[in-house]
Each structure stands twice: as structure tokens, then as C-alpha cells.
Image 1 (cartoon, rainbow, N blue to C red):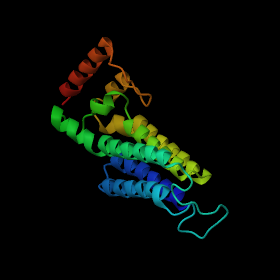
Image 2 (tube, rainbow, N blue to C red):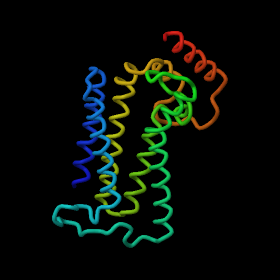
Image 3 (cartoon, helix red, strand yellow):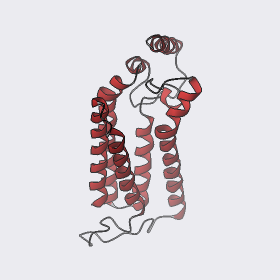
Length: 210
């Protein structure tokens, strides 16, 4: 399936971009942009391609039009879920980090630990998983669910690599951040007093290093 191949290439490009960032290579940003385009293209194909094998010739399963045979209310609910997840993904990954740094006077090399990032270290993982799951449910064919599972697994590998290798080296205070905020399972309630004290102490240490 074309969307599977595009997703694999896109996530591999994002992993390679992280390697280039660690090496201080100027091409890292361009490779990262290409990776995001690949992942975005795979996601759009999952959502809007006329059939699971498009644009290749029909093979095996018949082409299934998006939303074919689904109850309109179910489609509307799934579409709303996908739209909300896409909006939250764009916010958390591309907008919120910069906004929080400007709001709190953080440098570009400091880890952001507020907003959605106070609940878990990679909130974008969940927004993307919800997005592709909702899109697959709208399509309602096995190949779409397989693509959603593949994209989610690749995204997990990416965020795991970033959490273990890239972010601790490029973001100051990330090791302290890891001690007080969970990796993926979000903390929805208010932080305990001890955790708030740890976060405050970590903030002071990160600022003292600059």
C-alpha cells in the first residue's frame, strides 16, 4: 500500500533527522521537513484515497469509498474526533512549544514542561494515534486498520528514540523533566505537592546552568 510505504519513509526521515541534529548537521531541518511531509502524506492517503490500493491498480480487495456503508452519525462523530485530534496534534507539536517558551521566557534549548507537556512527555503521540484510528474506523476496511497500526507503531519508535537519545542531549533540563512527568501514560489529575516541588527545583537547576 502506498500510504504504508510513504509512512515508513517519512518516519525513517524523522529518525535520520534526529541523528543529524545530534551531529550538528545543517541538513537536519530539511530532512525533518521531508519526514513530516511523508507522514502527512501517508495520513492524508489514509483519509482521502479512493481505495486502499490507490493509486495502484486494483488488487485483491475491492475499492472501498471513504465513509461507504457507515451510519451518518457514526461518521460524523469519527470525523469530529479526527478533526479534534489533528488540531491538538498541530497545537502540541508545532505551536505550543514555541508559545510556552515565549510565555515563560525559556530559551530554544530548554525543555517545555507546561501545557499539554505537564501531563506526559509526548502528548503528540496520543493525538496522532487517535487521528489515524478514527480515520481507519471511517474507512472501515482491514487494510486501513493495518495502516493505522503501522503508523502508530512507527510513531512510538520515533518518540522512544527521542526520549532516550535525542532530547536528553539537545534540551537542557530534560533529565529532570523525565523524573517528574511520565513518558506516555498521561497524568490527568493535579500534580502532588511533592511533584510540584520537584518540578520547581528542576526549573531552578536548569536556569542556574545557563
